[in-house]
Image (tube, rainbow, N blue to C red; front, side, top):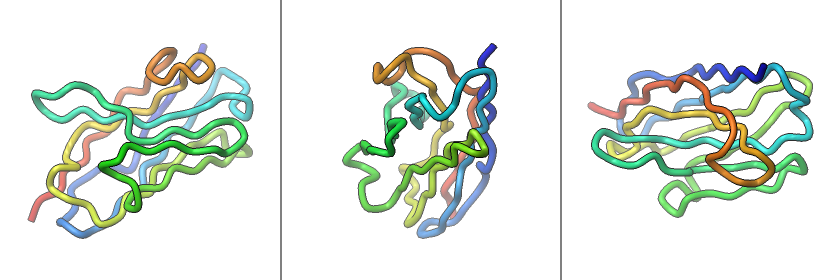
Length: 118
């Protein structure tokens, strides 16, 4: 059974940084693509970053140049480094293990809250 456990969320001031982690179990992590989504109050869940098994990445325009997704296959963990955070980055962030490259399909973590506020 696949389990995804996110950590690293919290309260940060505008301009600050956070690193989210998602630890995966129950599947062969190295062959899976992984992604980060977020959902702000009153908005739809959106894809913000994805990484393939080969390390290719995709980003939403809103986070390009500020966020970086990476993976450590030895630890079965995917990371999201978030820099230059803005108030509009406030959301619940979810880890996703898609079926193939069908982002948003498959399995989800429970989410971690990120709040950007002074």
